Image 1 (cartoon, rainbow, N blue to C red):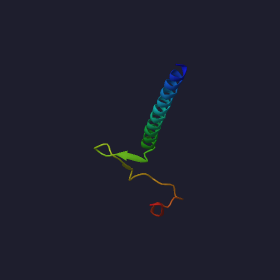
Image 2 (image 1 turned 90 degrees about the horizontal axis):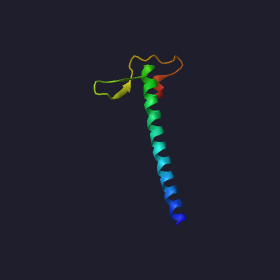
Image 3 (image 1 turned 135 degrees about the horizontal axis):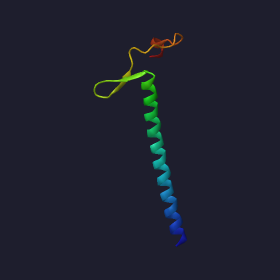
Image 4 (image 1 turned 180 degrees about the horizontal axis):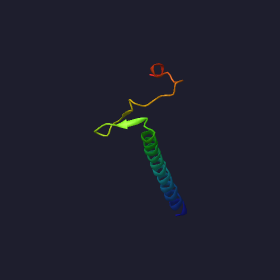
Length: 68
C-alpha cells in the first residue's frame, strides 16, 4: 500500500515539475520579448506579428549584411 502512495506521489511530483518548467520557459520568452521591444530592437505590426525594427541602429562593429 505504501508503494502505491509513493508511486502516486512520484508521478504527481514529476507532472508538477514538468508543468513548472513549461511555465518558466513561457514566462522567460515573454520577458525577453518585452525587453527587446523596450530597447526598440523588435516591433509589432498591426496584426501583432513580431518583426525586426527597421530603424534600429546597430553597433558600428557589427556587419549586418554578413550576419544575414
